[in-house]
Every structure is written in C-alpha cells, then in structure tokens.
Length: 436
Image 1 (cartoon, rainbow, N blue to C red):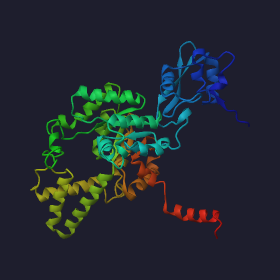
Image 2: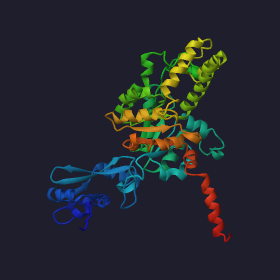
Image 3: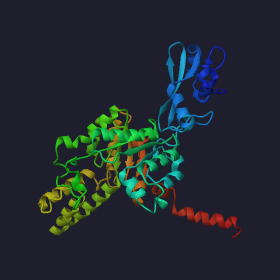
Image 4: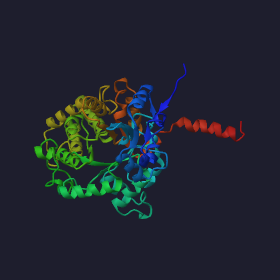
C-alpha cells in the first residue's frame, strides 16, 4: 500500500483560500504535516487560512528569513468562526525552527554571561541562565574573560548575549537585589523584558530562606555570616520569594524559581507557579560527601575532634549560624546524621548526588503544571556522566522532556569528548598522512 503524505499546503486551492493579507506569513507553515483524518476534516470544515497576530508579531520582531518560522516556537492551529483556520506560534523551547522538534526531549542550557562562550554553543541550547555572581564576578570584573574591559555594564552584556542567541533561547536573568522596593524590582525586570522580548524573558526569583531586607547586611560585612539559622526564621521571610514570584507572574513574567537545594523545597516552590524550578547539584553533593566522611570517622573512633570539625564545617556552609561556635556536639552529630539519611548518599538513590533530581522529577510528574526542571551547578568528573545515566533510567523515560541541563559552556563542551578520540585521531591522521 502506497503511503500518501499530507501537509497544510495540501488544502490550499479550490474552496480553501489563504487570506490575502496573510499570505507571506501563512506560507511559512504550509509544510506542516497533517494526518489523512485531519486532512479530510479540514477539507470539509474550513474555507480560509490566516495567521494570528502573535504569528505576525514573532516573524516581524525577530526578522525571520523568508519561508521560515523561528526556533523556540511550536506551530499550532486554532479553529475560528466563519470556517477560518488560524495558524499560531506558541512559545516552546522544545522546538527548533520551522516547527521541528529539537533532537532530544531534554534541553541543554548555558550557565554564563560571557558572550565569547555563548557564540560557539548558541545553536545547541534552548536556554541561558545567569545571576549577578555570573555577570559581575565571572565576566564583567574578570579581566581574563572580559577582554580589554569591552563590556562595562550588565545591560551591555545581556544585550550582546540576546543578539547572539536569537529567538530560540529563553534567557533567565535575576535582578540585583530581591529585597529592593517592589517598583524598583519591576522596573529592572521590565528593562530586561524590553531587551529580550516577552517571548524570551524569564525572571529568576530566588528562595530567600531566613534572609530579609533587615539582616541581609550581615552577608556583606564582617565575616559575612548570618546570625539566624536557616530553620529559625519568620514565616514571612521564608515565603518572601514565593510571594514575590506570584506577584511578578501577575505582571506577565515567566518565573525561574531558583536556589533549590533540597527536595523538600519543591512542593511549596510549585505553589508559586514557576516556569522553571531547579536542582542545585554540585555544592550539595560535595558538602554531603564531606559530612559523611567526618561522621563516619567519628562513628568509628568516637573521637570528638571529628565532631568539632563537623561543627566548624557546618558553620562554614550555613547549617549553623555564626553564633553557634559552641553548639552542643550532640546536636552537631544529630544534624549530620539526619542530613546523610535524608540525602541518601550511602544508598543507590543518592550515591551519585542525584537524589534531589530524582525527587523533583517525581514531583513534576504529579503536579498540574508544565514546569520544567533545570539541573544546575554541575561540575567535576562525575556530575554530568551521572546525570546522563539518570536520564536513561526506565523510571524517568516519561520525564526527559521536562529536563533542562545547565552548566558552564566549557563543562558541557568537555563532556562531548573522550580519551579514545585522541587515540583514533592519531591513527586516522597518520594514515591520511601516508604513514604505516
């Protein structure tokens, strides 16, 4: 039996016409495949094909080449009154140009504000994330990265990155001070929206924990440690980020809810209706490994020096406050033991540091949102390979389209390589050079 392929263009002619003023737009989508059943239904139902206002706006805004639709948009159809079929473009970073799906269900993202790093990876990613630390510390104020101090302001950098990336990438960016006056935060966010357009703009809102406008100064002076423990703050402080996210969402911003280190943060984070949530991996796994080592050493020797080292380490990494230098060692042992048990580092679930990722994917499977998970803060010889294996686990086959992997472009690039590439290139190049 011969297979006949149908596309939207198969309908045009006879009783079905393209709206004349929309023809240059509509013809960009006529290649879209439709089933025989869809063909039969539309042939009997529609008389006109046109383009939505959003379709036209996207094409005109991004100056898309003739005959194409841009990456980052799904082509959809809407049935309107008077037998009118409207073609629309809906933001979806799972799609490449011309409505084709990206090669993999999961998406890669760059965690950088360095335009020189963005250039070689721009055609391989669907998102870019950055924050004030990445923008200022790692790029603007880093003479090795910001060659010749060409870029002097955050807006200069982000405008350059937006121009390099084109329409296919979301851009997640964070305001400088989440504790500023709301109108100041809104004004700052609106500047980014104007720079990137509504289609690409994603606003990063951080969990703020015990930090608030009154005590944030403690993080900027002296030993830069907080006097409040992470779990001894006021309810309003813990939920400040959630409420700020909801408020910014009301102003039309898609929200990347960030600074998520523990699985227990996920359920409430989803109440803020975010576009992205996050699993921070690197620091959490390193800290867990160190705590596990000291706790194991104490349990084998009962030498309290290990608990004292644990106490100092827990102050350093904010499990304890700056005023806990004399905290009871039994409390320290209890906190360490609970941390290890929760993070499951000695079990299959968390030995690779991916217990948080697994938990978040399960939570997303059971939520009512289309939220994606950004797996971030990835580094070292194990992190990416372990994440790569996790995505092949049978349990998560249905969730790979919710995963966004973000890290420094150089780290992503490193993990395209292998030692044996050198081995075989040596052989091939010598063979091509005429050697035995």
